[in-house]
Image (cartoon, rainbow, N blue to C red; front, top):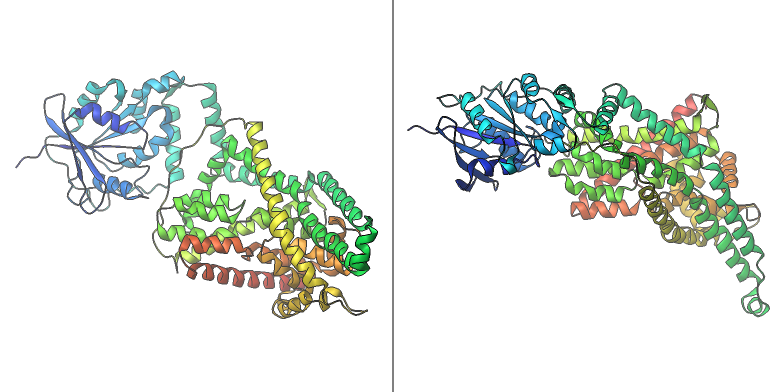
Length: 631
C-alpha cells in the first residue's frame, strides 16, 4: 500500500503556524489524539504544485528539541521518528516570525540539523516590514542551506511559492528513519543563540535604530566573556551604592527616632495617672516604649534607605529589559548543576523574599525540578538579611578603600550575595544527585527590547516595597521585640549582674549558647537567634532592645548599636554570624509556605535540617579559620 508523503509543520509558539496550517489545508482537516498522551493531532490534506497529495500535520508549538512539556515532547518525537503511531515526516516546514528572527532561528537550527528535507516559511513578513525591518530571504536561504519562502498566512501570501518549494524537496519515496547518532544537536542554547543572531544579522537589509541598538547592546550583554563581567560590574556598583548613598537618609531616620524616644522619656504624666499607676509602672511603660518597641523597630527601619536603593537597581534592571538577559546568561551555569532554566525567575524573586519565590515555582512543570528550586530558594539573599548584613559590616568591617571608589564594605556585601548564590548551586548539585535525582529540562525565553524605565513605575514599585517593609516592621517585628522586652526585663537582675543574662530571655539564651559557642557565638547572638525565626531582620531589633535594657541611659540609634557590637564582638565572631545568616532558614513564613507548596511537613523539615546543618558548619569553619589567620 502506497502512503502519501507526510509533512510536519513546526515552529515556536506565536509564529503564525496554525494560521498557515489553516490557509494551506482549508476545511480538509482531521483532529485526533496521539497514542498514550492527551495532546491533540491536527492533520489535513494539501496538494503540491505538481498535483501530488501530501498529509500536513500541525505539531504543537515548541522552543527546543529538549522538551519541557508533553506538547514539546510530542513535537520532538514526531520529527525524530520516535512517536508511537506516527511515521517519520518526509519533510518539515519550519515557521518563523520574521520580526523575531534571531530567537526563532534557534529552534530552526536544531530542526535543520536533523537532516530531513526542510523548507522555512518566513511568516508575518508584512508586520516586520511595517516595523521598518527588511530581510533578504535569498541571503537567509544561503545561510541556512534550505529554501526560505516569505509568507503572510492570514492574507494567503506566499502559499503557491511554499508549495513549489515543498514539491522540490519531497522525493518520491518515504523518508528513511534517522540513525541513532542523528537527530541530536550537541550545541547548547547559548551557542545556538549566537549562531542564530549571526545569521539573522547577515540576512537583515535594513532595520530601525532601536533594533540596531538592541543588537549592539546584546553583543556585549550576552557575550560569553563580556556578559558575565558586565553583570558582576552592575552588582558591584549596586552594593557600593547601598552603603555610599544611604548614609544621609539613615541619619535623618535616626534623628527622628531619637526625637521620638526623648519625647517618650521626658513626656509629663498627669498627676492622677501617676497616683494610680505609681512611679514603677510608669517607668516600666516608658522603658517598654523607648527601650523595647522604639529601639527595636527603629533599629530595623533605619535600614529602609538601603533596601530602597537595592530595589531601585532591581526595578531599573527589570524595566530596561536587562534582567531577562541576565537570566539567559545564567542558564548554562544553572544547567551545569541540574537546575531547570525555569528556576531562574523564582530564584530571582527570592532575592526580594523567599515566600513569593517559592510560590513562583508553580510555573515549573517537572516535580523534581520544582522541589529542588523550593529547597534552595531560602539560600537566595532576601531583603530581610540586608539590615543584619549592613549592621555587622558597618560595625566591624573597616570602611577602607581597596581601589579608588571601591570600598571594602561594599565588596564584603557583594561577597555575601555571591556566596548565597554559590551555596544554592552546590546545594542544587547535591540534591539533584540524591533526593531529587532526575533529568533536568532547559527553557527558552523571548528577549524583550531595551527601553528606558518609566519613572512613575519605578516610584510605584519602591513605594510598594517601602509599605511592605514598614508593615512588617510595624507588625511582626514590633510584636517580636515587645515580647522580647518582657522576657528580657523580668525578673529584674540584682546589682552587679547584666539584665540580659539574668532575665527569662537571658536564661533561654544561655541554653542556646551551649550549642552555638563552639562556632564562636556569644550570649548576645544566642539571644537574637530565637526572635530571628519570626523574621530575619528581627535579630537587629532584638540586639537593639537588649542593649537598650542593659544600658538605659545610653542614646539609641545605629551608631550606638554598632559601638556595642564593636565592644562585645570579635571579628571572627562577626564573620561567623554573617556566614550563619547566609545559610540559616530563619523565617517561619518561608517554612510555612514550603509546607503548603509541598503538601506536608516532610520537605520543610528536610529543608530546615539541611540548612541549619550547613549554617552551623559554615559558621564554625569561618570562625576557626579566622582565628587561625589571627584576625
